[in-house]
Picture 1 (cartoon, rainbow over the protein chains, first blue to last red):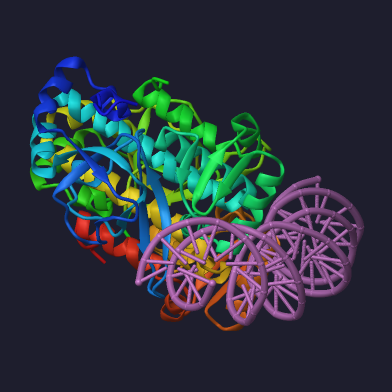
Picture 2: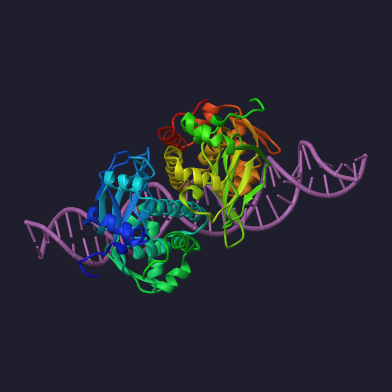
Length: 238
Length: 238
DNA sequence: AACGCTTTGTACGGTAACACACAAAAGATT
DNA sequence: AATCTTTTGTGTGTTACCGTACAAAGCGTT
């Protein structure tokens, strides 16, 4: 991965026609996001939208009880800021960088103006909104019916896809938070996966050793969402 | 409730300015949907979109194992057919009528044309799409952290809101399917609620006796979603 | 080397919801 | 009245994950 980032490394941007992408280019700026960085607080309006390249941004809901729990993760398959495209300045969730990496960022106002004027741009962003709806819907199905083993496997695959790497920085604690379970439960299942030679990990760094096996362990949800993204935004490059 | 239905009984339609609503009127047709009716199969394209008046439409995912499980329910606060607005002809979920009632229906093609031309209409529909995203996101949070008692209470309130009535036709079986739990679990919790005088029920008919108490029993999620709908689409009439 | 912080490991009782099995009751059908 | 179907009730053992507590190990800092 060179230090130069092409816009088509993000699948939403890649779904645009060359001329629309050209129109966007002057307003896209590559930035690096640090792990744990808080992008926006629940209910606050934001200055930029983000098109991830090789990082994962997670949305969290802060419960009245004080704890927070993950809602979804966004990576190179999508964008953070659909709400702004759909006409809402804020969302009731906060956004945190789950794994560090790069993004294309763009000012909200600029995107909104372009979206209003350029039909083809709007079409693509709305298709992503729909893909996004499917992604969350499938999460509802998944957590109701699938075991923690399946969910953890799926989450590791998703993070791997977003980080563009087989290994990434992520503690059991952070995963537990995202999946809405105890840290100890993650440790236990992760231990099983390690015993079976599917993954390895050490102090916050996880590596996927046997991807096919990991895919076999996770539920249909992973594929359902993946297919829907391909259908709506076109096949991924890799 | 008279036999004549005004468009503003649906909150998405009610959010439109008078002139936009006028433009839609010729294409809206009131229909009655029977309980259990299958509106569209997973992956099939549909001829109409629906703006519910006093019924609930549920989305279901058919799992590879054969069972199906609820994803979300749609009533007078929304519409069935956002996917078509966002540019997708199909979704990977099927739609079933959970409680019978009336809808405004409209041909997909007509809505798509109007949406493309009329900015104000598009704005409102996209705001609903965003509200919809919040609704599902909150479902993810809810089923992870809240007890079945809370979820059942919430579901009964939601159905009551959609049916525009304190009592409605709904068996434990159907609720269980929607919430993704066993029928026996629903029977047990519902029995508790009945003992406490919060609800009463009999062979498929449920009545809410003490709404305030029921609201007290359910989690914050109900209010979070309600507020977000109000913020995006304006306050409800009632 | 000593200390502290972060991350991971393990153990134990508790509980909410599960799977399965079957009974009872209320309407519907003949 | 007898039968059938749908809906609801109940009981028994099982399981996945929880809450809590604490130990061990890895890494950084001084």
